[in-house]
Length: 314
Image 1: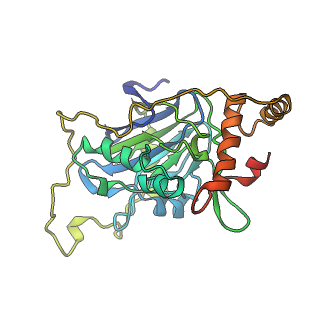
Image 2: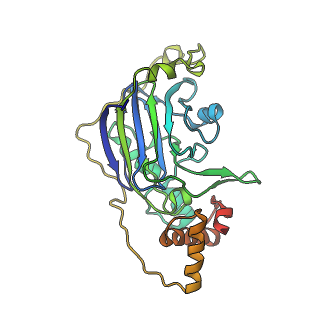
Image 3: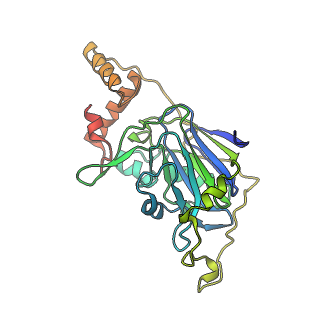
């Protein structure tokens, strides 16, 4: 049985989109070209102070949640607010925080650069939220790991055209997805590509099957404002779309420029060998981009490197 399509759009590089996702609806995030990370935030649509919490979700489902994982809100709520019901790839991350303008300024010397925090902040501005309201994201399609020394690293993105994840809302939420702004990190294989998002109605019994799980059972320790000692809420916490909102993403449209690179026969042969390994890309341009940025990161990047040295050695 096919799900009924309610809404769809394509997010171009440098942009994101906030959508109202009602309880029982499903949000699909889909690869248009492949190899692109999607950052994702969730808010309770009726009380924005309740939002997705990476730490609680890590505790319940590990560093790389996939099909069947629940998306949990922060203490003191401590409850599942969505479920990851489909994941065609099985490569996600909730270890790394969102990238920000500071990281590109400090680590790369790029004070002007698209980044997930600014994109998320702009997308959720449509619903009256501020940059302070952005929280650590669920990084879909991001391939990460921990090396023998205990340091995290970012490995090549494995997503292919048509791969997708589907998130089922267990409460009414504001879902905010964006095209990850990291093109000088391995997060999206050193390139920015569009992503499709779509809202569907869930299939019969799909919501009930998630709500009947033992983890979704209510507990008295899952506290909401009715149990708080301070009863006065300092601000309106209901989220509604600003009908006059006009997107104003920074650094867009993204400018792309092709460069001619002269290589020797031996260097071309080496690129072709790397293509055959299937680790760093499927074309000479993709592999060369990965090799160049890996070299640049090793030689010039300030601070922690955060890339897969084993893949770079290939």
